Image: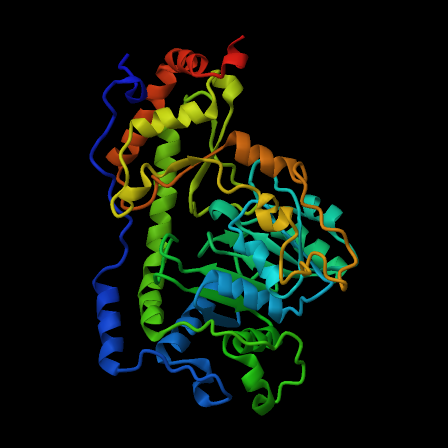
Amino acid sequence: MSTLALLGGDPVRTAPFPAYKVIGEEEKAAVNAVLDSGVLSRFLGTWHPDFFGGPEVQEFEKEWAAISGTKHAISVNSCTSGLYAAVGALGCGPGDEVICSPYTMIASATAAIAFNAVPVFADIDPETYGISAATIAPRITGRTKAIIVVHIFGQPADMDPIMELARRHGIRVIEDCAQVPLATYKGRPVGSLGDVGVFSLNYHKHIHTGEGGMCTTNDDDIAERLQLIRNHAEAVVEKKGVKNLANMIGFNFRLGEIEAAIGRAQLKKAPALIARRKANVRHLETALAGVPGLTMPKVGPAGDHVYYVHAMSYDAKATGVSRETFVKAVKAELPPTGLREHEGVLMGMGYVKPIYLAPMYRELAGYGEVGCPFLCPHYKGKPDYRLGLCPNAEDAHFNRVVTHEMMRPPMTGPDLDDVARAFHKVAENLPALRAHDHANAPTAEKR
């Protein structure tokens, strides 16, 4: 049995893993065509034929709508912008509540605050890590205007019960699809299930344009409001003849022609890239069989998972080794990934600290000295952001979840086998790690 690298032995592998580099000749040609055209953007912030952007933007939107099974796709310059626009388009405002997941990128909840609505956090399912109808229902009040459902880690939430609950209460639903492009729920594309879907094209997503995003909807009115909020609504509504002026406060959330051209090329690659992720996960999970304390991700009722990250559950009781020590030991056996060397091994404990534990929520500090929306006189509820609010989310983050990204293309079978070898090597050395944990425990704990 070889000595662990954490304890002075040689690592399983030192050569960096291959970079996730999906930009190629197709994107270069697309960018050059835009440069040759001389049109880098064609948006005008007024009611004009160019209000909807240039040819690449409009073609990208048509192509995205087609693959998402929706009537409309509206491009934006980030998923965050898209979430803000979605909350505004659905009419959320002061005094309203928006139910959110606590276990996601913080912008998924900040979008509510952008329009002075108050985020209310529903706990997550302990196996799939997304909010569910069962956890949402107790959070619904007469102030609930919308629900933002995050399809986390690459797996769609269980949407049918959520949509039934929402429709029964007259509540709108936003799908945060940042981590699930091309995923399906019971055969239906994500982004077509709620009132609005919002996708990310940030550089570390499945496909990307550097920065960018896309909103999808089947509702003509919502589509118009998304377009208005994206592009200086207050300057456009009069000439366009818009009568509902609620939330018609515009931004510049516009996507450029270069990004749209890259996105069109990326969209063609998406099915193969996602298929490769799924195949890599199957390979890796087979190779990880028998590692004590590890449970592989559960694929829930959606029946699909596109693996933004590979999120496993760790049981310290099964190994007698803390999650921190176990993860450190595995990481010590493996190299970083190309283009992201500064991040070290792409593996970590938990995902993000539950959002409600961030300073803004703990201090109820929002807009101005008044603290809107939390302490806004229009809000008749009482914000609840205490520790213990969402026990499943807290347990997942602080105790159980182990995530990694070492299943992305172009990882090969031998690359994945090296990852598995690192886990098995650590499993074979659990007695040494228990001794390490004991030797490094606080003095009071040793006594």
